[in-house]
Amino acid sequence: MDGKRLRDEIVAGIRAEIRQLGDPSITLATVLVGADKPSQIYVRNKHRKAEESGMVSRHVELAADSSQDEVEEAVRDLVNDSAVHGILVQLPLPEGLDAERVLDLIPPEKDVDGLTERSMGRLVRGRPGLVPCTPLGVMRLLDRYGVSTSGKRAVVIGRSTLVGLPQVLLLGRKGVDATPTLAHSRTTDLAAQCREADILVAAAGMAGLVTADFVKPGAAVFDVGISRTEGGIVGDVDFDGVESIAGAITPMPGGTGPMTIGCLMENTLTAAKLLGAI
Ligand code: NAP
Image (cartoon, rainbow, N blue to C red; front, side, top):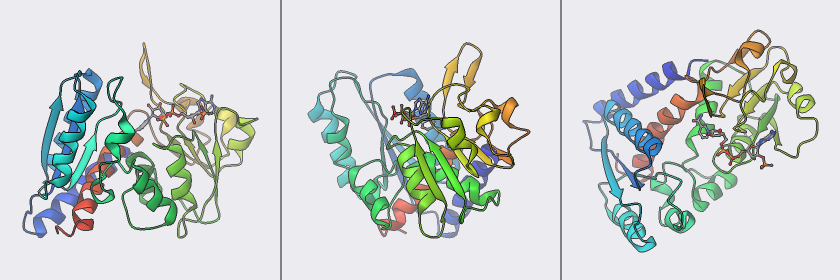
């Protein structure tokens, strides 16, 4: 399952939709506190894709020693600016800053990362809202590659609010209708649990955790974990060992990572719709 290709399709689709609407200025704003290099690269990539999608991007960069009040004020300005449709605060924030208090300021309609308490509540309650980009990307890949979900068993490894937990909620939604299991570091006999899965999502952040003996023949395997090793970026899945057993598999890199950015673009367009701007 080619995440780069589907991301490009999503970006092209958004660009076409915006053009058809007469090129309204749909704006994604990012907030970065401090000069962490990987975070700067992530943010730059998000802006590049926003521009390719035909959207406007705005960037607010604050010094690493900014106070909680200064960060909150910057976010509040974006919340109150009707020209801004999506707000993304790049996490983690420098030590000493309370990310929860900052995220709490973002209204669900502008929460393009889908990470706030209110967005998560909407997801649980099945109300319209924005959901976290990485698990949404997995859902888009399932759909694009025709992987059937109804009545299928799914195992998600990892229970973070960023990936694993919303992934389980999305897979179990009415209309998707998979039967998900949420596995974590205390799960006993993880391999046996995973071997039951028609859909396996690995989001543990442990290089090569998922080996051939974890995979049911024909299963769809999604590699979300990212580990930086001397040999480069590797995922949670031993791709070479699993590829011949799985029915479908995402590469790492080139799978779930690009889809995360594609879904951020999709969420920004959805935000503009939720705000009634288009
Ligand atoms: P996290 O908050 O550290 O959560 C990791 C989860 O994996 C925890 O629930 C943990 O269990 C579980 N886990 C760790 N080791 C395990 C093991 N050996 N067996 C079973 N479960 C295990 O991380 P996260 O934010 O969810 O991110 C997970 C990974 O995805 C990271 O590598 C991150 O870099 C990557 N990521 C990728 C993308 C993308 O676009 N591809 C996006 C976001 C994150 P406990 O709860 O019991 O500790």
